[in-house]
Length: 128
View 1 (cartoon, rainbow, N blue to C red):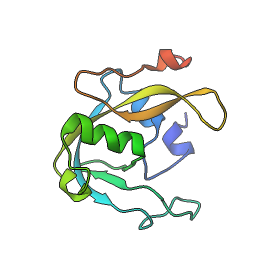
View 2: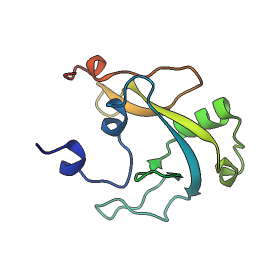
View 3: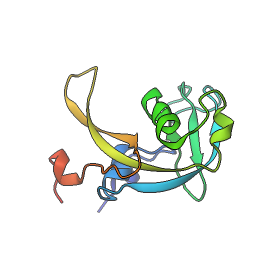
View 4: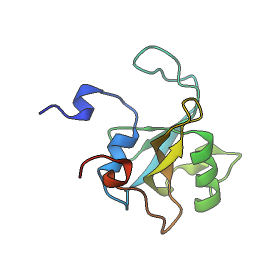
């Protein structure tokens, strides 16, 4: 059986990587931040958001504004110095969000606040 990761290889985390981990999500420690434009997606387009690399993790997180704000709010990170995020342990979960382009709901990776639970695969309409 071919897995999602085998069918769609990527260096970056996606909701499918997190949702199978249960409502607790995954804990990761930030190793470093790569600034926008330094990396490219597999199709050759530049990554336009900061990339968070984690200790002992194979994949990184393309950090949107929502997740950056959550790191600052929930983990006390310095919003003016992304390099200071090194060593912060965060938890990633999945939440259902409205896709602004299509208007439908979709699973998205979110930085969890302490104690927050994410959705499980059953809550997305998928099979357990």
